[in-house]
Length: 240
Image (tube, rainbow, N blue to C red; front, top):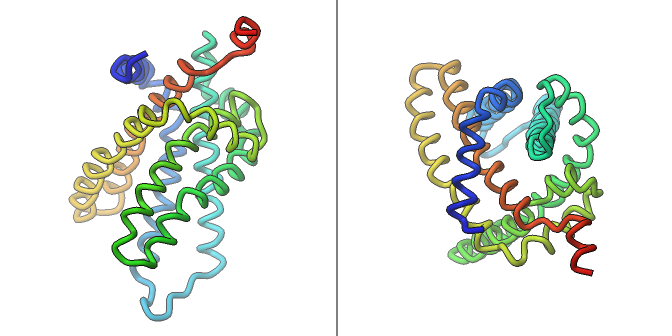
């Protein structure tokens, strides 16, 4: 299936289910963005020469990771259930998503470190940071399906990372193209957030949460790309 067709189907799904998606994800997104804004403000106010971050900041980071993992678990489970023709209430999906939070958290930490490592390493060599960025983008594309491997395939974190890397090989270019949709969204979010910042925290929270919600379209497009290229047990038997 062409990339255009995949994006079209993802857009139609996002448009047709926007109310259900909002009910399911916006409460979590508001919490996530509120923590991010608070941590960002704390970093701006910290002494550049002697920054001090205590237990409160560590706890906030941990809560942020848990909320993000919960959000991804709920969204992925919702996409899986809808692809099977099921229609559960948001409360049921959230409850069913809880067991996936610990493995998603671990998988997210491991894959996140792998993705950030090249940028951090090459940044020490000045202009070579651009090479690190390209390598990180490549790794991001190869590990973009870890969440689906955990929730849909029910794999452990390490198995999910290995499976995502193997699965994404033939569709790396398409995956990168989908992930690059984050760039214009991030630029627009930054512009509107700067304006909202002048008004106050409540408006900035709403603006950033709204753009984070729109960013879920990328996850939906990735899920569609995953489903199109996924090998089911039945398909494996047919090939055998």
